[in-house]
Length: 599
Image (cartoon, rainbow, N blue to C red):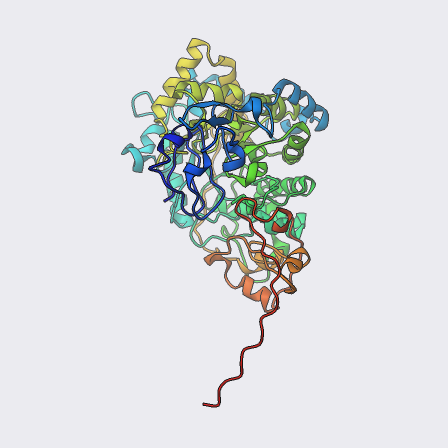
């Protein structure tokens, strides 16, 4: 059940590895991967019985070192590009040229108005850092590091451990099970540790606040992006971003890993609800609105949220959650366009198709987004964490993005080669900060320690494998984001940080759910009603869970009206029997039950 299997061993082990339960086999760390999209059980022996089988058709995802593999009956693998019926590798030089023609450029001054790595304070602070300390700014530690290694994360941050150079950021990952006040207390200890380091560089403290700061207990749980896209009210999206930032700041944190600006094109993707919709123009508008709300100063956040909060409702902070928050557009790029909707899969796009998925990032940069997160997925066989043409050539040069590019958690681990080779490939491609897992293994590959990261990147610089200028640029981008949210003074010194408040005031769930027309999802009649054989409407609600409260019931019973339109194709857009989606034909009405017997 839920096992992972390296595809190179698939045929040899098929006799003993009989089947995949539930949703299937999940990808394993950048080797040959097979995601079985048919369920509940698929005999893997059937999938590799013929050399002619194209595994991207059979299994939905097949990536190994940039090329799909064909497996013969004896288990040997060969490159499948030459005979692949679907696509061939992109010429990335030509593709980048086409993308620059298709997507209008932005002047670097657009991004520089929000984040300026050439600012005097940023350069002054950078000048005080050694090479190893600059590499330390490129490291994001997992807050749960001590649970995994027994090390004290504070000792890493304050430089007291041997070979430590501090860190640029800490991610609050995993199941935190903590209130805002306890998160704020943990954040305070981390900031104090960083302030004890000789360089006293402030920390970025990030969290996956994608629909409110929902990882904190008693937080205001806001609608997922699909609900906001269904409502298609940009002022509501900006208000949701502002509310999220208020509660992130109240928990002592300053970096929200949102908005997700994917354009989901296949609703079999399990994370479809994270996108505003399939139309890149709609996604672009809401991406800009979300960035504006998330990065607004505290007084502007209050103005943005006030119209959507009924009398008596309030967000956490009560006037004291005044810290600035950096937004993060993700996951770059085309994570919503993978084959068969496979999570972390391969997007089979040409330049025209890819341009559609890049437009929301242009809108986010134009709105001043301070960071961009890279996707685990690939485009035509090239892992995004190693795609220099898109990360550097398109995002940083063509769009003039001046903020920082951060990896996803353990995303660099999915590249091929040893740890030094992987880190060098990602950094040279344009990744400025590596998010290093502390408590789990990403995609089946164990992550290395923070010491290994510092040692490997330092060796890569000294050997010339990574240019020193690339490290200088990456560290400057990290420091510039810190300066943009008020952590670094114009003189390069740490700025006084605003203290967070307790969790009092959490819990404004109802009004937000009603405002989007359907809890965390949205729905309408139309196509769904036609397929349902005359049923008036089908409500599509994504992950309502225990936090949806009475929102869906209120909608069904008419307490609040339905509004909006589902911003994605309904499942009827896919052929019956394709992958996991099947559409049953309308059934004739059931005959009435027989009358009760006299007895």
